[in-house]
Image (tube, rainbow, N blue to C red; front, side, top):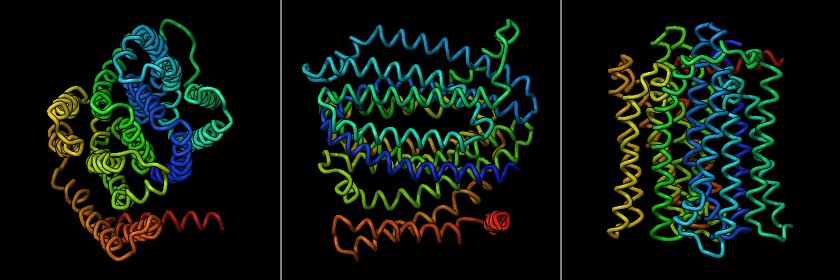
Length: 508
């Protein structure tokens, strides 16, 4: 399968997976919130979020491992692929053990610093233990998942993730029949599901990919490979921890000033935002390996062109889905939840808007990872996200509204998205004018048309809870039409048509 067809197949696989999982995720979240109640769900969201701060190291290691595996695949250096995988696995084992030890040592301190009712403190500490074990399992899964991404086997990843969504829904249903502490049972169930995923990834990779096989010899593990992985992962971790400081720092600040009830609202908003992220993730997972491979192959201009297309497609598809959802968010929440916690709508809209803004230049983030100029980029693009937390805390302490803090959240994302363009111009010779004309400008009419369509339908249709069942599909249909006719170039439309025709002919 040629690279472009593989991108399309992988994108379709991601979308099918995501459409299934978004329904499973939203429904299971509704059940869990109903069964656990706001405070228990808030405790789980808060504790898992605090532990998840270190979980971003796992994501950094996945990105780093996948970057080098894809890079060396593109360069045709299979021996280096095997060496990088072996060194990555060793590194993950060491980091998993170290993080687990640190977290268990500071458990009491962390638990007593959080604003949790005394009666639920023991349950919260048990949830902490389970989430730490889940984090260790996730860390150990990382190199195997990274190899699947580097080999562009997105189809298998999609199958495992759909199975994961089904298991989470079954877990939510099972809580109805549990008589003991449901919060503890829920945490144990989530841990078991993650362990099943671990077995699925490890078994498949070991059976199917020869580069995952290596002998435990001294020459297999070298300091040069470890330095490359640690150096790149270190700065990638800085970026990811900055992002989680922005999101979870907001959660902790809200908890400090308002208690666990507001964490339920913020946790639900994060759930909605995470479910919608499939639009971006589908494009990123399909295109990022190709971006890394083109850089490894020495074709910088092809790499930048792919990065531009990634930004354009992920933003356009995100606009088509996110703008109608933001417009109808109150009705969606009323339909989804029996009781909507205060501020949930505000948080949902703010997080979706911030994520949408980030998409405009997200492909340039992948391009920068491909070039390997990571230290300066991380300092310039992610430090503002850390500073935001301190400013937000100060604002809340001086009595600022929650809406003002979330407005600042969105502004920081806008500043970072804009900053990527001049940075890539200086480090990777990005043609700014070409990027603006081929990526940014075609997206403006799409955003305007979808927004106007939403406003017109809200103004015309009766204000009922189920209005969104009409307005959102109509707005999405209009968005798809504009995307096809105005956002895509003639060449891009022709290419998609040819792919569709070839698929239909092959089936006949």
